[in-house]
Structure formats: C-alpha cells, structure tokens
Amino acid sequence: MPLPKVTIVGAGQVGATAAFVVALRGLADVTLIDVARGIGQGKALDMMHARSIERFTSRVVGAADYAETAGSDVVVISAGLPRKPGMTREDLLAANAAIVRSIVPEVLAASPDAVVLCVTNPLDVMTHLAWRISGLPPARVLGMGGVLDSARFAYFMAEATGAPVAEIEAVVIGAHGDTMVPLPRFSTVRGTPLTEMLPPAEVAEVVRRTVFGGAEVVGLLGSGSAFYAPAASIAAMVEAILGDTGAVLPSCVFLDGEYGLAGLHLNVPAALGRGGVREVVVWDLDETERAALAESAAGVAKMLASIDLHA
Image (cartoon, rainbow, N blue to C red; front, top):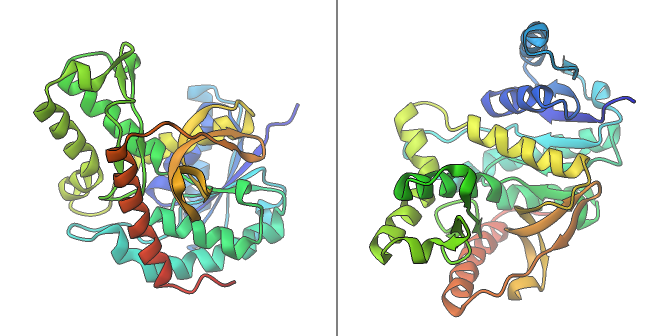
C-alpha cells in the first residue's frame, strides 16, 4: 500500500530536518520544496543517500514547483525568516506574513484536501492568517508550537527531578512565545504533579527556563534558531494526523468559545486525526491558569489586529 504524502514548504534547518525525521519513521513520502532552486533537491538527494544505511522505505524528493506537491495529505509550512539573537517572534510578523500569504494558495491549488500545519513564527498569528487565507474549515489548519514548548518543559522537568524523560508528561498551552503558559499542576513525574515533586521556587525556575528555552538556543547558536526539537515536534503531529490516532497534543487550534476564548488560534490540548483537529479538549483550569491563558490570548489578538487578515 502506498505511503501517505507530506509536503514540507521550506528546506531550511527546520523543514529539512523534519523531512528526514518523517522519512526515518516511515510515516510518509515527503516532497521538500523551496523557492531557492536546488536546495530542496540537494537536501532530498542527501537524505536518499542515507536510505540504505537507515533502511527506511519512505522517499524524499526535492522540488521548486508546487505542481510536484499535488495530492499531499499534509502540508507543513516551515518557510520564513528565523529569529536572530535579540529578536522576538513578533519582530518577524510582517515579513513572515507575506511569505505565508504567498504559500497558502499555491499548496492548496495542488492539494485542496490537505491538512495544513503551520510552523512559521509568530506561530499563533501565522496559523490564523493561513486559515483565513485558505478558506478551509478550522479543523484543517493548525499550528505546531505547544508540542515543542511541552517538550522543552519535559526536558527541564527531567533535569530538575532526575527522573527519566520517559516517565514525564508535560504540557504547555497559550501562545508560542514569552506569554506561553506551562501547567505544572497538570505536568507529572511518574503520575505525580510537578507541584508535589518540587518546592515552589524550583517549579518557578523550571517554568522560567521553559518559557525562554527557545531564546536560550538562539543565543547560544548566535545565528539561526532551534531545529531538532521543532522537527521532532512536527513529526509527532504528522504521525497523529496520518495515523488518525486521536492523540491529544498541545496544538495551535482555532478557538470558538473554549476556555472562554474565541476568534483566534492558540495552543491548547487537542485530539488530532486524519481530518486535522478532531476535538478541542477543555481542561478544568484554576483561576490563575485561566488568567494567564487570557493574557496570552490578548497578546495574540493584539498582533492579529495589526495585520490584514483578508485573502
């Protein structure tokens, strides 16, 4: 039986690494497209040279023409300018909005039935923009941010507690940025909430490192931003969608009254499947958690108000 098809737009560090992870896992055949001719093709060929070593069956092809992306089940939009030291995700707003505007009509003309997964920053705003441009049902346009933020939270929890990461469940909701909302009360070590594992000051430090984890990577690299963890996060979401698993992952989804919020995309727990978002899962947040989520949403709404959301 033929494998599903995933298109990844943007053959930079994030996009190319995601293509390789998806191929290694055998999740789909991948088309890697980039406006810079030769980049997608060259990286795809390099990955295929690794095929006999890693023994994966997926094919990765490079392209510069959207016609070659036709029939994709999932389209991942990772194209955009990366953050540089001292730059916020918000600084990328205007430039990356123009990029997303140019991509969405092209990919949907070739793959009108695809689920669109946005990765371009600022993530929550670009996902909402992609949805508005696409004209698709909200379930079919979502963003990758919460999975990555939760992965960083899990790492810092493991470092603070000494527990194996396999025994940790971590969750972060809210905007993919400095107003994200890690949830220590819902994040566990061997089933025990982090709030019962560490004193408040240590919990606060784990939360702080999570919020600024991406900026820490950017600062250390000096040029460019994270790509290994984002790529693995993309693959996790692609696996849930293509496998129709119903896995509940923190995902950037359209809210229509859930958590008291409406009319924007934000990271919250969501069950994913073949059609994209099966269900937005509403957890019983306390007053402090709800206030933090509302503040995070207000920041996204402010950015949305600053750009033209029409197609």
